[in-house]
Image (cartoon, rainbow, N blue to C red; front, side):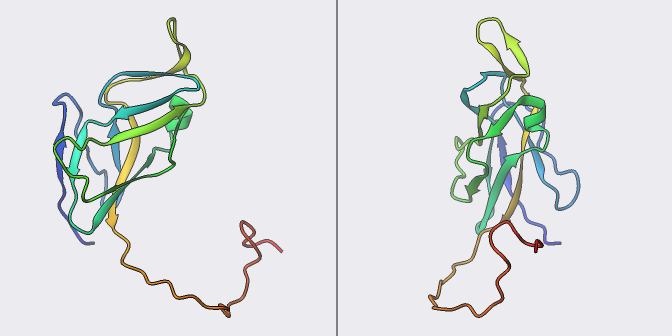
Length: 155
């Protein structure tokens, strides 16, 4: 497996380090501060890092599989894509989210969810950017149809 180097800057020394558990697996990202998000509200949770990715690479950020169950949060754009040009000292990574169901209660804010500093809320992987693609228009593709969107394997 190819090995690459990326540079990471932590915005807070109290933030636990980002680590990859095994070769090729995703890296967990943590909240950089305590945040309470009320049900029905949008929030940008700071992740407390900036990175310089190698030229020709990008990072894909997605929620962890436990994020909705544990916190009632969904990532508002589904997937975050960070290209290698977003690499300045203050180009901090964020987790844009929406609270759909409350997991805790705050007397001044009502039902919502409490995120604590260093809670693992999302994950990322580094991948090669898509190469330049030239789309060639044709009138027929000459392949067998699979049966429609979402129907693979059904008869």
